[in-house]
Amino acid sequence: MNIFVKICGLRSAEHVSAAIEAGADAVGFVFANSVRKIGPLEAAAISTNVPPHIKRVAVMMHPTDEEWQKVLREFSPDVLQTDAEDFSSLDIPDSIEPWPVYREGRSEPGTPSTYIFEGPKSGQGETVDWSRAAAIAKCGQMILAGGLGAHNVAEAIRTVRPFGVDVSSAVESAPGQKDKQLIRDFVIAAKAAEKEL
Image (cartoon, helix red, strand yellow):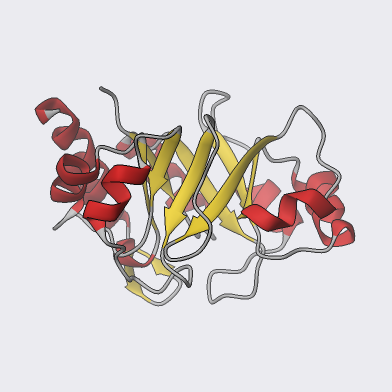
């Protein structure tokens, strides 16, 4: 089983390159209010060298369709990630892969496709209940997020058996400041854990 790894909240070409070199499968750019927020033109500029097989993810939260269209036009992502209930109000071309976010304690996914499962708030470094997540992970392709780092991602993968894992705050030296070594450590730990499944 190959574990899909997403590095989220990237804001520099240097850290995008570090994620790719480490073996990440997706790179995320945050367009919601956050210390990791980036503009769509800036995100486009720092992701010009992302290979086609690595997904460029637009991470949003309750965007208006106008906000989404601006990101689509200026950044042209491969994936839109936002809360599950947001998708009904957005005009999304078939070329964009939707990754709905389901939050612990709220609605649960009934989808066979890829989705994010995390805690009530994004980017807070809070883990979800892994035993509950393990039951939910049997449905579709769960990317587990929330409180994951190099120190616990192997245990999370063994317990939950998700399709993938997502990290942001645990690969930072300070809020919003990514660290190349922490990115490498996380990807290595996640990819090593897949050998045990």
